[in-house]
Image (cartoon, rainbow, N blue to C red; front, side, top):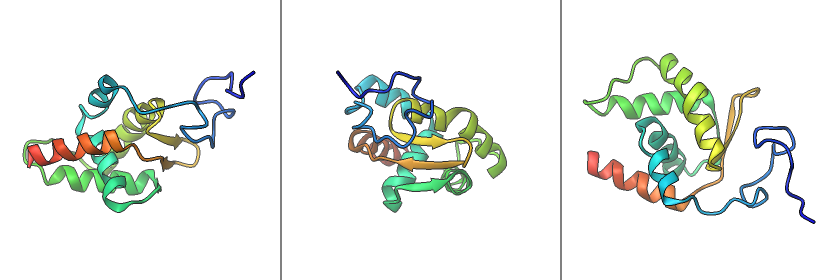
Length: 130
């Protein structure tokens, strides 16, 4: 018998579990590329890789992502508020779904577990686009 939760991954039963507890392993390469296809998700991963932080608020991430985006001439960034909305509605849930981080909508907090494969490719893309 396994201790694997039976509920959906975003249920309370999963909350607080690490990716190892969840039975997650290194992301499949297709998932890595799909996750890094959007500059905002790359910016989130790079924020955690660069700062070595393991958690952050949505507001902190929105500010960091906006600042990183403004450094790129080809990107339409918008305001911190617009980026924050995109993070909450699209990008953080997607990264949570793939086990890269845990996003708690209620507290608007993010816990990053570290994914060396994802970080490596995010850094590579960042270098290429400089």
